[in-house]
Length: 316
Length: 252
Image 1 (cartoon, one colour):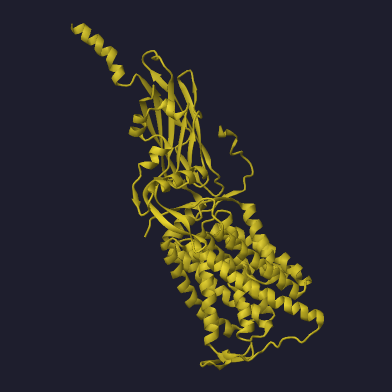
Image 2 (cartoon, helix red, strand yellow):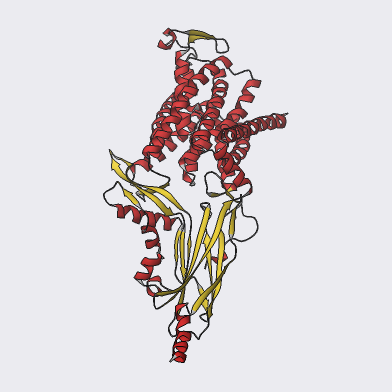
C-alpha cells in the first residue's frame, strides 16, 4: 500500500497555480540561483538557460516561455540600475530599439499562438533555440578565441567604431551617449528581431543584442550592456503582459521563486566574474550557449522514447 | 396458499432489494489544493450490511475513483527530414483526467466482461467509452498511447488487491491522489461483486478545488489577465530593484 507517503513535517513541494504541477521549492530556488550566477558572471539575462531547464523539470512549454520572460524582467531591472549609476545607458537608442522590440514581440506572440494551434510550437521553439544559440555561440566563440590570441600575441586591437553599409541608410538620428549619427532603421530592425525571439523563446535576447550593437551599429562597448538591458526590460515586460493576456501562461509563483534564487545567484556571479578575464569569460559563455544548442538539437534528432504526447484542450 | 405466497415473498424480497448492501464513508469529501499541496490520500471505508446469512462463494469489493473529464489532443511524432516532429493528431472530447481502480483481487477474476461493459469499471473500458474524432490512420494506437502515458504519469492506476476486506464485512481502500490534479468533482464508486456479478453499488463525490493563494492567483490570471500581468511585472520590477539596492548597500 501507498500508506507510507505524505509524512507530515517540512515538505518543500510547492504547487504552481498556473503550471499545475508540484515542484520542489528548493529545486526552483537552485535553478534560479545557478542561472542567476551565470548571468551575473557573463552579464546576460539567462533566459536562454532558464526556459529549457523549466521544460526539463516538467513545466509546460507555454508556461515556461511566458514565465521565463517575466524572470528576465527582474534580472534586467537589477542590472540596468547598476548601469545607470555608471551612466552607461543610451536612453535614446534604447527607446528606438524598444519601439522595434514591441513590433517584433507582437508578431512573435501572434506566431506563438498560431504554432500552438498547429501543434508545432515545441518544434518551433526548439528549432529557434538550436538555430540562434548555435549561430551566436559559434560566432562568439570564434571572435573571443581570436581576441584571446591577440591579447597573448599583443597584436592590434579592433577599432570600436567601424563604418559599414549601415551608415548609409536614410532617416538619420543623433545618439549622443553612443556618439553615433546613424539611420533609425537598423536599430528598429535589431529591436524587432530581438522582440520576436523574446516572445517565442522566453529570452531577453541579450546574447543577440550585444553583438549586433557592437558589430552592426558600431556602438561603444561601455554603453552596450546598459542599453541592451534597458530595452530588454521593456520588451520582456511587453511579452509577459501579452502572454498573460492572450494565453494566461504566466505563473507568478514560479517566477517569484526563480527570481529570488536568481537575484542571490547574480550577486555571487558578478563578484566572481570580476576576477576573470573578459576574453576567457566570453569563451566560457560561448561554450555554454553551444552546449545548450547541441543538447536541444540532439532531442530533435534522436528518436524520442515516447512518440505520442497528450495535450489538454481541443484541436482548433 | 396465501401463507405460502407471503412466505415466498418474504424470502424473495431481500433478494430483489439486494440481500447485501454497502454502507460506505469517505475520509474527506473535499480536497483543497493549497500552495504546499503534494497529493493526498482518500480513504474509502465501509461495511456490508446483511439481513440474512451470507451466501456461499467469495465476496469481492471494487472501488473506482474518477476525475473530471477533459478534452484532449493526442499527437504522434514521426521523422520528417531527419527531425522528429508532430504529424498526426487525434482529438478526444472527454477523457477522465484521473482514474484509479482498487480491488480485493485480480479484476478479470472478480468481475465478468458483461458487468465490466455495463458499469465501465476497468481503466480500458472507462477510457474507451470516450468519443474519438479520428484524423489518423490507427486511432487505437493513439488510445493505447494515452493509456500508457496516463499510467506512467500515475494518473491512471490499477491497484489489484489494494482493498482490505475483513470477514467479508469490513473493507477499506486508500487511494492516493497525485499532485497534478485537475480541479472538479471526483466520482467514487464502490461495487460489491460475487461470481463476477455486481450485487450492489454506491456512489460518492469528492470535490477538488484550488484554495487560498492558489485559488486567488488562478482566478486572477483568468478573470483579470491584464491586472495579473501587471502584478507579475510589479513583482519582477520590485525584486530587481530590491536586489540592486541590497547589492549596493552590501558593497558600501
